Length: 281
View (tube, one colour):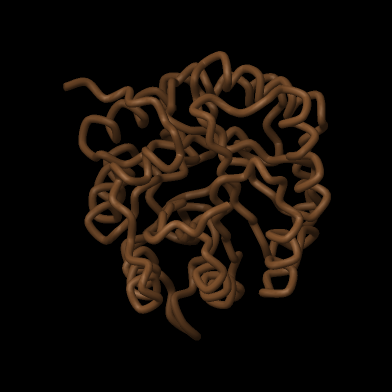
């Protein structure tokens, strides 16, 4: 796995856990998502990881809402549009498969079940296998989300069983610091990187909450890419809340620049990930 000179910065602006009432600055409407996406692309992001909310700001997997978001972001940005197939921890497995109907460029694919705080994020092997095959058939590029070292082994099992994803590239994201998953420290991250199967062509890392900075630094030092955003962290510094996802993207882009691996263009990101260009001329 060659080290990529630039840095793919993914922004995860919303998530499914935080409430709009507690964090009014959280982008939950379509208009807020579009404004966020445009600002974050200008700040250095080249991919956006989307959870969608309904008119009451609650997490939803409604096809109309998902499709509207994908179409709007594809029209108004050049970002790689990735939809979460995790939804919220309460969404049924069958409904999570329907996310692919919205024709995103990419989808998240979590490689195993995880204790998620007081809840359980359910991803049995049969479900992730079905999701992987359907993503291949729909020509959607999965990003394999790894919350624990066992998920790395499950990724290898998926590739052995079904071959490479559409586009031929294998991109993974280590999600660290979730209560119940792998800790958000460099030692745990690098242990996971050392276990990656040979087919992996690029990897990124996410640090939840206060782990976001040490994980970002470790990932950049080790040749990885970054995911940041209010889904993962709403505190910019001690006692200071994030007011806009752009702030987190700007800091990630600055760190990447300092490490001589500046933020990657959306064109380079598409090439690295092997995504299908669904944009109309």
